[in-house]
Length: 146
Image (tube, rainbow, N blue to C red):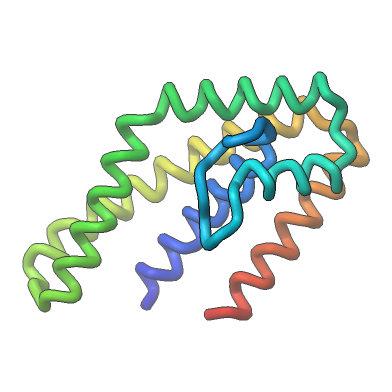
């Protein structure tokens, strides 16, 4: 349960920040019936981003995905392998993947924190405050679902 929570928080943090950055149409594909581009457009409207800010954030998100593609793929694969091992009752394999996942989660947090600093530098002080509030609200909603 704790590992699922840690994974969920890592993914949520990454997703929330990248959602702000993925402001161009087709930014992420489809998630639960709602296109990520549509979601990020609504977020851009809530933050009242200028066209220049939207472009800066889109470029930032694109660079982030390109620079971290292999790490993100490795993280997803390890998480999938861990879940499969847990489901199959293969505790030896799950235990061997656990340390790797914890290390990757720590690295993910570092990447996310660095990305947040870059995103923050693009936003005005008012937008930063609103962005932090929206992230906190989303985290609270996510937490209440668990």
